[in-house]
Each structure stands twice: as C-alpha cells, then as structure tokens.
Image (tube, rainbow, N blue to C red; front, side):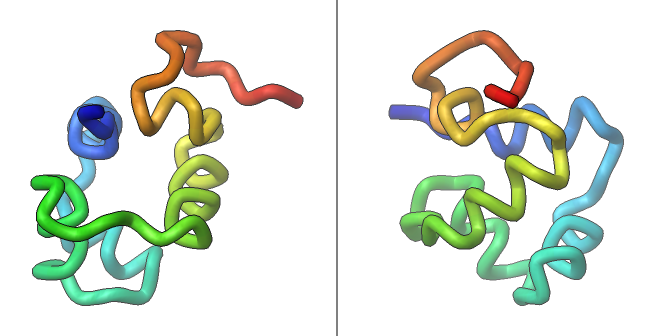
Amino acid sequence: MRLKIRDIREDHDLTQQQVAQYLMCDQSLYSKYERGERDVPLNIMIKLAKYYKTSIDYLVGLTENKKPYR
C-alpha cells in the first residue's frame, strides 16, 4: 500500500522540514516515512490527518475521498 503523505505535502507546497517541525521529529525520520522505509505510528497519522484536514483512510490509500469523516 502506498501512502499519500508525500503527495499531499507537495499539494500544500510544504517542505519535509516544515512537516517534521509540526510533528516534532527530525526531517530525516519524516523522509523515511514518506519513502516507506519506516512505518508511520498511529499518533503521527492522526496528526497528519488533522493537519491536512483529511482522513487517515485517504493518507494510507484506502479511499480517494479527501474529506474527513466528520
């Protein structure tokens, strides 16, 4: 399964560093999440979904609907 976290970051014209700062992690770790070299912890996926105002299902590729559930 291909994560969409890189695509959505680029759609928002953000750098990895900017997103990493929001998540309070190193840019190198965030880069590994985007490349699929490290699993993204659930708490990070929740933060990303809230940040981008979307659902975790969208971020992990289970749906093409960007709208959050609520």
